[in-house]
Amino acid sequence: MRPLEGKTRGMLAADDRVLWAGWVFGMPQMHESRITQYDRPNFFQDTMGRGRFKRYQHDHYFYVMDERTVLNDKIRFTMSAGLCRTACGPVCARALSFEEVAAAARSAQESGPEPQRVDEIPARE
Image 1 (cartoon, rainbow, N blue to C red):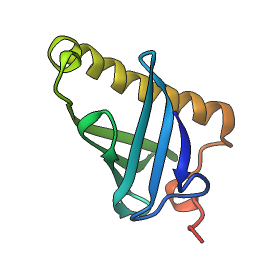
Image 2 (cartoon, rainbow, N blue to C red; image 1 turned 90 degrees about the horizontal axis):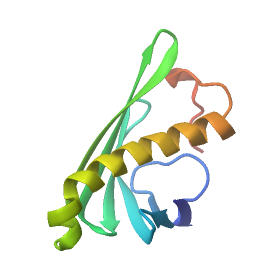
Image 3 (cartoon, helix red, strand yellow; image 1 turned 45 degrees about the horizontal axis):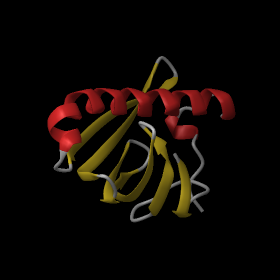
Image 4 (tube, rainbow, N blue to C red; image 1 turned 90 degrees about the vertical axis):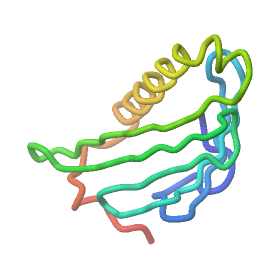
């Protein structure tokens, strides 16, 4: 998934919106996220505005452990009605959660600088 519209660069803040597009499970996907809660540097929440799910909410908790920043995610969603919900729901749920975390970890390792402490992350301008 890649950002297509809205806040596509820089740090996110409360009420920012991002429209994501890409391929997931071999199907084209569009997913609009809005930052619905923001408590820098400890927490933010994104909530789906539109997309394939009936409901999707993702909490991101940050804390410092052993001088490293740790991210703890909590994802809540409801599948839309249809075959995927009844036949594939549990499988899709496990694959989605794993794939999202794995993709984020790969992206951070490949493109990011050394991890920063939460209190060292620059303020949004």
